[in-house]
Length: 415
Length: 81
Image 1 (cartoon, rainbow over the protein chains, first blue to last red):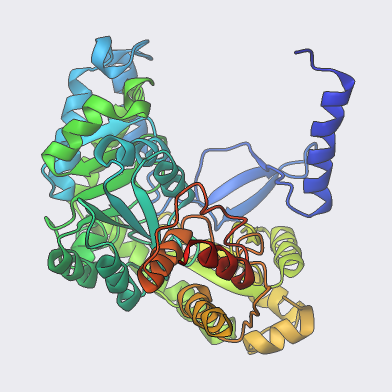
Image 2: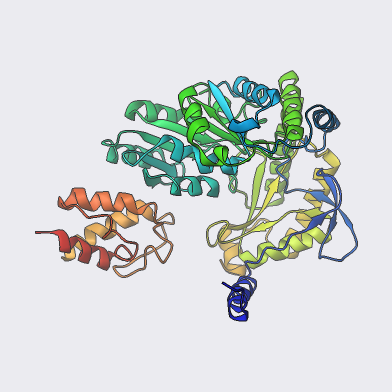
């Protein structure tokens, strides 16, 4: 079918509606490596501005770490640029197997399979393991990639209220007749920064004979005393049946993900998961970088310890200044503004002050829950955080929201 | 009929509403209004089937048929003998 003017007009109208509804996403171009200090072109065509990055998933500050960059260079030299094949034809190098083994050891699981991304891992894992006689019971705030993966699976799907263990138990009772029950949650929830109650979930899963799935993308590398993830934090290492995670955040930040867990489930993914079977895996250069990242994290907890201290400083500073925050103790610290336009205006004013932090609003978060999501990094030094805090306080004063409750902010600006 | 409406309304409030200040009525759009997502419909379907000892075929359990308490009650009545 030709791409006629009529067809073009339909798509143009769709894009225009996104713009009119305030839902159009404008990318900002970064002209430097990913780090605490970045140079940004925004709006398009403007001169470069040096800003402090407060919204990257670069939790451990490893995205541009010299040792990781060198390892990637070495990998590029030794194993080349691409594989030009999926894994099961001729796309598996020794370093892919080495990385799967190292991730297994790092997470304390039975086996691991790499995917091009964690999005792909979540898209493929459910369909490979479950069938129409099974049920998936997911927290209502799980990541979009999990929702997409569940849509591709023939098992029936139900949900429980966010982190509500009483509700989860009711659902496990409701679906007691199903062959397999799988409880599905994020380890740390990306928008609110809170942590799943894995201890209680493990108990419920044991009581009702269910499997437990955790996406630890916003945890791996820094949550728990040695950074293994939420299962370490909750003292349930070895009791999670499936962990999915990404190498695109704390673990070097490039790309790639994995499914790690019970060896039979991993093997089924290797045999049946479509994003694994029909797509190239992670490029050798990235594999080499991630291998070095895991060595760095196994040698010392210095970076996750620094991240913890930075997070404490940041959260305490915002609280004392009088902002409304989402409760939690992870490096994701959402500053609640409730109103979508206020979150956009606040973000723009922060940018003028040299701080890069994005406003999030519906449909990314529920209606009336607009916020600035800040993310702390071990790459931040105290001077970065102090400058960012000063900027937040200055902009907070401008909008007169410091010391105000949710109700007072909503009364001033609406939901 | 009215009793069934209240039972379903109470279940929907208990099961799906996150904000205690939120109020819904018999004709509030549940799925098109974003209160119940299509995934979460399954528990509502199973609740109705258990409560009224009926079986609702998947082809009848559409988002449209579950879009308000009124519509849900109409649907249940179709299968009640």
